[in-house]
Each structure stands twice: as structure tokens, then as C-alpha cells.
Image 1: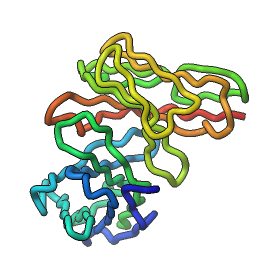
Image 2: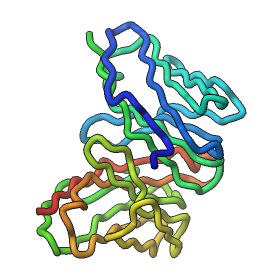
Image 3: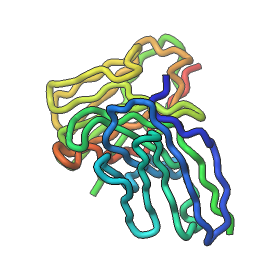
Image 4: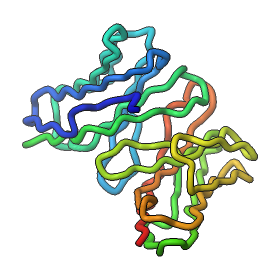
Length: 114
Length: 114
């Protein structure tokens, strides 16, 4: 039973436009969410996170939105660049500073077309 | 500035053989993890450790063993390899406290069992 779902396996976006990657979760106990980015033949790297006490967190071109009532979060990349082409994983856990391991979604492959 | 180092990067194993995937980190992180990623799937937690001498099972521990005798090293042992263990294995580490969910991943070890 998947607790973190990324229902779009892939997404193609034109360079300069907005990329929106979606993530849904089923466990209402999750209260901290993260996005990781993965290039081929490399390990995932941390991108951005959000605590359940917030509904938005920004870092440069990347913004994560959290809708707790819908158990949904999204990652917005504006403007999209070819270097953003990668697999993006959504992850969730129960508290921000604990040692409860992350639960990952299946990932969405983003292709930014020049 | 090595971060998390995994060896080997690639390996082919015969059914029934055993092997150890090595993982070492030089960031003095207390937490270490082993994940596996199957094609089109997310990262599934195999085992994790919150410190030397302490290990715990994740979501998919069957067929694997771990040990954590030092802070730096967290080897993953595959006993009696099966084709279902063909996967890419990622080792990761993180700090305690507020940074616990920001994992630093290794580049991965691609294992094929034939």
C-alpha cells in the first residue's frame, strides 16, 4: 500500500515555462515533506522541504505547496531550465527532527525541452 | 570531500551466491540507511541505523543483513542471492536533529542476479 503517490511517471515542459510536479499521501500522520532530485547514474539530492505548519516554502526557482486537507503537495519550478531534467521524488515522514525514515514516492521524470 | 562512498558500482552475482555492498561516509553522520530502487519504482528502505551498534529493519529487509560497528561504515550483506534482488542499491546518511531528513546519498550500486 503506497503511502506516498506520484501518479505522473513523466512530464515534459518547454524551457522557460512552469513545471508542476504533484504528490499525494495517504497517511495523515505525515507532517514533514521533502523533494529530492535524481540525475542518471547519481544518487538523489535534497531539493526543498516543507513542514505541515506551513503551506508554502520557496527557494529560488523552486516552490513547494502543501494542502493538508487534500493530503497533496506540489513542486513548482519557474522558469524551467534544461538542467532541471531529472527524476523528482516526493518523500514524507512523521516529524522534522526524528529518526523515522523517509517514505518515498515512485518519482516523476521531468524533461525540459529547449 | 567524499560524502557517501559505495562500492562496487556494478556487480553481477549468480543465484545463491552471497556478497557485501560497502558503504562509508566521512561526514560523522549518526544515521545511515540502505534503500533499493527497482525500475519505475520509488526508493524502498531495506535497513537503517541510528548509530554504531544499532540497526533496524525497514520496509523490505528479507534476504539482507547489516551491521554498524563504526560510525563511518554500514555494509549491506546479501545472502543466497535471488533474481528478485536485482536492483540499484543506495546508501545514505544524515545528521541527527533538525537535519535528520536531509539525506546524503551515495551514487548507487547496480546489482544483477542471474
